[in-house]
Image (cartoon, rainbow over the protein chains, first blue to last red):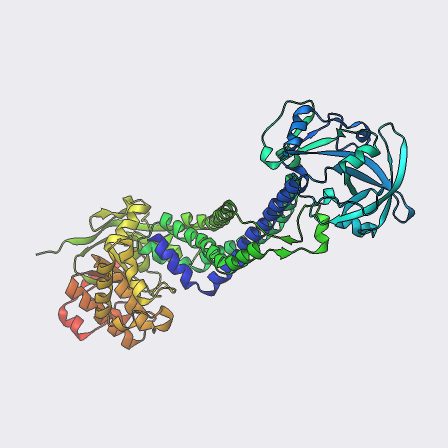
Length: 389
Length: 244
């Protein structure tokens, strides 16, 4: 009965109801949409990083600290037998890392040299095309690196490095492949070589810095002295970054929700003031104070339900369309440091929709309830006269 | 044969606190209203008519004394019990109609039956029946804003009567109506009183109402100054009586 009365009152309030519902539905939609975008970023970046860089986890040389470049010269060694077996079985790929220096426009620039078997299938990297001329060593760079260096396929790159004994060496390399990647950590400052070439350059055949296992090996850990880093461990930084960006965005939609809640609160306060005589009448007709509180609270809370339905009507097509077609990201999005592609596909989960719906409904109900507590002190005689008790 | 008393009031006083102490809106009221009466509390503004009506309607509580309405001691009822008494047994008619503005005529009249949780079809039949009686069946879908003052008050009467209450309390029901509408409203209430046996108690200082009353209880300064049962001749002649 209370629900029926609340619906009647809500419907009867006309424009006021719709204005509140529209404002609230905008917050509703914005929260779901923006969270969907961030979730989409995470899903996309995770997928790309697994496919192009992390695989199902990594076995690292015990001396290698990825946060300390000074460890690199010592951080390689013979690949342990269990890992060697995986490589032979096409379930892992070895990478050799070394430091180098290039000289774009005559200025030295540190780069990371990465040696990888060209025929590998573990990471979604293109094979390094062979050089046309014998004696030339082919290298591969990412599109972003290519654009920053203003060098493309067929052009030469002067590179200096130190071999296994610490002796400097330098020569020109031929860029044979430029690949597109949405993972900045395999593009910026990276030069990819064939593993065998880099091993020769370092005068240390058969060595590697890390071994990346295939995604199907996730969760399997082998007995070896190389340090295993799981997929979850390797993705932790990305997830933390998404969480921090998502939290930043949450401030915006919390603000929007707050404004919408103020509108609902304001309506409730105004209702209690303007509808005092109506409350007295309802009490004279036999409604208890408790029922009156429930009625007014429900009226306010129904704004949330109406907002949800409104958001569904205009938001669902937008949500569906963006989820299917995605949307192009501006160039500036590269600064996000996320491994996201040129198009972003938001991902909306049931959990996201349910949690957001619950959040909006609970907050609207609380905001609706707070002013109605005054009804518990309402004197029906004063209310009938339109006076405050 | 004497009819059962609907209202019994014994030594009721109602005091309001004021800066200089307290103000007695009602003092030592003794009154009994029998079932089926068409009576009124009459007196000038400030005489205590509405205060007494509110006490009888369990909207307010007396400072002292005892009020028994339909066998229930009003001063002993808690808020829930008082609400139940109003919901089940009492009908209210207000000077300013107090219709719910966002509801249609039908919904306004239906409201007390919703509180009684009557089933849908019975509700509909009861509402249309009472609207027929007050001559507003064709305005069932209208909203209060679309009605004249007289029509609004007839809706209020229908709302008060739809659940067939034992007692209807009407506070200045004609104060905002012209003479024609007032007479039409009073005729309607008189007919309902006669047909359904409902007890009506008015609070009024309007001569147009007084001339219809069969019993006139004159209040002055919070005390009963006169209690007169009028004969049918006086009522039929429509004499106001010049009580105050």
